[in-house]
Amino acid sequence: KPRHVFFVSPPNNATIATNSKLQFGVMGATVTPAGQHIEDKTRGHHHLLIDGEPVPRGQVVPADKTHIHFGKGQTEVSVQSLGLTPGPHTLTLQFADGAHRSLGAEMSKKISINISEN
Image (tube, rainbow, N blue to C red; front, side, top):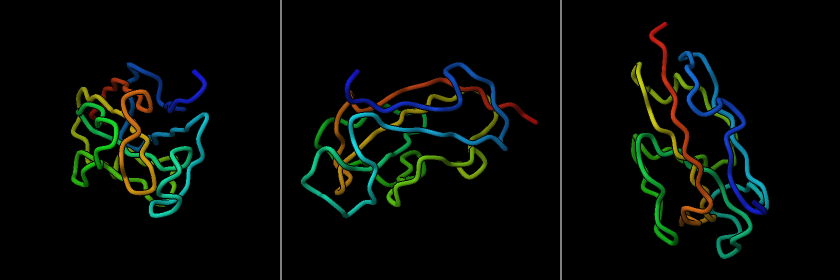
């Protein structure tokens, strides 16, 4: 794919501990903080959707406990900070422009993980 987002770690279907980190990236676009380059669709930042579906193109990604914004341009997060309960979860990485407008399903990536209890 010439332009896409991806998880560096963990791999799909992994079992991970709460002290793990999620790492993610993008190809064909540049990560920049929210509020910058608002009309430039080749720049933006990541969002993590917990147990949810990609946000349709052009819609603003909500800001709540299941839609985590990385508006400072972050490319990693500790699992513990997400407050995930032990068990299976689906994580969707969603790239959006500087105004938090989704770049659509083609700029998202979904994985399944299992959070271990210890």
